[in-house]
Length: 202
Image (tube, rainbow, N blue to C red):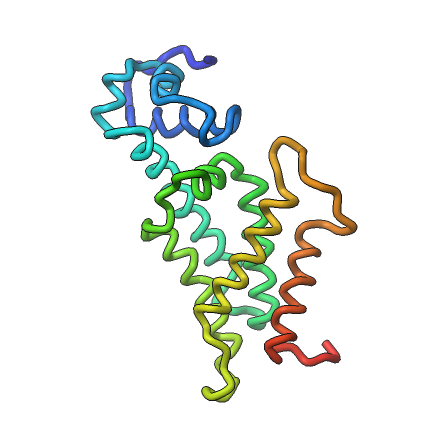
């Protein structure tokens, strides 16, 4: 444990930072509450003043991760500029960038036993994808329009699957013939073309 100890300031913040360090070192399931408290420089009893259990602490870390994640996706979407297809590609790339640059947060968000699906920030991130899909299909006649929520889940699944397979902090990701970003872009194009949203000539 590298910290010199916690002496003053915001203990809740110190515990979140300690948890992120431990996730980076051992994964989201590789440490105990006592270890998080020790790294923050406090006793386990002090930790329970802010979090009722380990799941509560991890939920706080996941919540903060999803807030950053949603901000990144919203920025990438950029209100659909310069055009919806390019903006969706930017959102997908932002998804992979977050997984690559914030692996501890990402692991907490999607780790075993995560409560992330119930967090409002998780919903905000998903709403970016729903907005993107709704914008993309807005020109399609209603009777031929794919379900927007289904599309959003499909794009989320493509991005998440690519991140899980090809972006791993420990370097164990399998080799691919192209970058994760290019793989995801090609998969997205195939998916959207299958829905008739991209002409065959594009």
